[in-house]
Every structure is written in structure tokens, then in C-alpha cells.
Image (tube, rainbow, N blue to C red):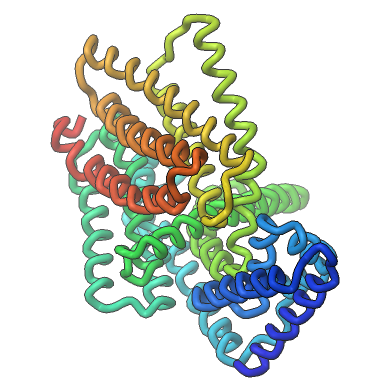
Length: 456
């Protein structure tokens, strides 16, 4: 099977080489150099776990950003290449066996997550009633342990690492439920927001098979997170259509399904979707570089223009930034989106490619976000000076300082890359290592803030 795969790869490279040699502008030595470059890329991708057909496709695609002839080759053979990507042909026996094993395990984990959210109802807690605060702070504890278990099984994680993961989930559950936080307290809201982030990074340890020190594996998890969000959104849209049809069709025959939808379909479906979306990302990992980076290319110029327009409006109107709670959440989400756009463009970029127009657009986006973050920090500091510290303002202050540090150093590295003084790989390394800072902060908010502010 391996020999057959190698023969297929050699046939594809031979076709690519023949196409290159037909170009009169390309000398033989140039073609040989390009072929060596292509083979090196294919080797790197196959060592990362891709099949040879998939590795060849992605290698040609990446070379297309550097070499116009390779881009023409990919365009001329796009039908065959895309068929290889979407319809890879007959899988080998080990891959087929692995798929058959993973599907029932995924279904089992999805069922566990779906049923977990109904366990509290055995103790009289109703998700559609007055027990919303309980479900809000425990929401991530219903699905994420099952997702971590799926990756533990898939990656064959060592027992010691499994013990650490289990301990962290238990710690999160204790912090969410043992602290005597009132239903309307700020610390409860902060826990409901930060616990999912803290536990998601715990899932990341399972995803990388416990090898969290590897920068490459952390970047793999960042890529996975982006693709998972996209698949989850698509499942959510499809689920919304299904829910509407369910309610409408049963209403047509005189049956009210509102109670079933609120108590079973929506909560159980949402929990199961977390697992199914992850399985889809894994099943389609050969196209992991396609979706998130494409959206990044579309939205980076739009967000850059929006932020620049916002800064111009601030200067024009001489208006300060409102630092009320809703406004703070909006600005923090905006800064997170900017970092997301930066991360997923990094994840698919050829580290050896020269800086181009898109890199300069990203630099403008990062600098604009940096200025806005600084303005928000000034407003928050003034608010704290006037009214004192509160859980919300303290959390906003800490998060904006963390984002400011990331954006400031990212802007410096971007500037050095654009000016040709730094390799792009330094920017990727900075982002992957900064994930640890987010993890520490999220756990600090969950574990320390309720105690520091007397559960208020």
C-alpha cells in the first residue's frame, strides 16, 4: 500500500515536472530547484500525518503563492486536485478501520454529553425554569469532559496526563459550585465566562496528546479551534432550521412541541454538537487550511477599515469610550476577533514567503486594535480611580492589559517582518507561547476572583 502511494506521488510529481519543463522561460536548473522545494514540502506534510495526495495538493497550493508557474499548474489541474481532496479514492485498510472505530466512539461521547445536561433534572433543576444560573456556570462541564475523553482515546494519552486532566475538570467543577456566589453576583458571571475558556485549554492538552510544550502542537490546536468554531456554527444553523421545521410540522397537526424543544432538543443537541463538530474537524483534517484562513482573507480588510474608521470618529468627535459593562464586553470581543484573524492567517501562511499587501493590512489591523485597547485601558483606569475596584472592572483591566501586551509585541514583530529584519516564524512562536498566559488568567478569574471579592 505504501509502495502504491509512493508510485501515485511520483506520477503526480512527474506530471507537474512535465508541465514546468514545457515553459520556455523556465530553465532546467530552475525546474530541478522547484521540484526539490516541492518534494521537501510534501515530505513535511506527510510526516505531519497527511496522505500523499493531500500533501501534494497543499504543497502545490503553497508554492503557488511563491511561483506563478506552480499557480498556473494548480489552476489547470484544479478539477483533478479537488477530486483528490474531497474524494480521495479507496482508503487503505488501516485508515478505514480507524474511521470505523472512531465513529461509534464519537457517537458515545456525544450521547454522554447530551445526557449529562439532563442529569441535574434528576435533582429537581430545570434548565428552562429558574435554575438558569446553575446551568450557566456549569455549561462547559457537561460537554467538554466528554470531548477531552474522545481525544484521550484517540491520541492514546498517557495515564498520568489523564489524571491531570481529570483533576483540572474536578477543580473547575468545585470552583463553579462550591463557592457561595449569589445568582446576581458579578463573580458568578465572570466564572460563567472564564470557566469554558479555562477548560477548553484543558481539552487542548488532550488534543495534543499531552505534548503541550510543543509549539507546533499548540499551533495545531489553535487551527483546530478555528475549524471547530466554524463547524459548530454550521451545525447550529442547521439545528435552527431543524427546530423550526419540527415546531411547525407538529403544530400543523395540533401538537405543541415547545416543551420538548426547550427541555430536550436544544440543550441535548447543543452538547452533542460540541463533540460532532470536533469529529468533523478530525475527519476533514486534510482541508484544515482551507476554511478559517479563507475567512481571514475576507474579513481582515473589513475589520481593518472598521477600526480605522472608529479611530477617525473618536478624533473627529473628541468623544471618549464608554466603559459600561456591555461596552467593555463588546470591545474585548472585538480585540479577541482581531487576534483570531491574526492567528488563523499565521496558521496557513508560508513562513518563508516575502511580506506582501495582506501582511501590511494585518499590521494596520493590529496597530488599530492596539490603539483602541490603550484607549479602553485609559477609560477603565479612570473609572476605577473614580469608583474603586469591582470584579467586572478588575477583570476587564486584567484582560485588556494581557491583550495590550500581545498586540504590542505582535505589532513590533510584524513591523520587523515587513521591514525584512525578522523572520515570520518569530510571530508564530510568540502567539503559540502566549496561550499559556490566557490559561493562567482564565483559571485565576475562576479560582481567585470569588475569594478576592468576597463572592460578590
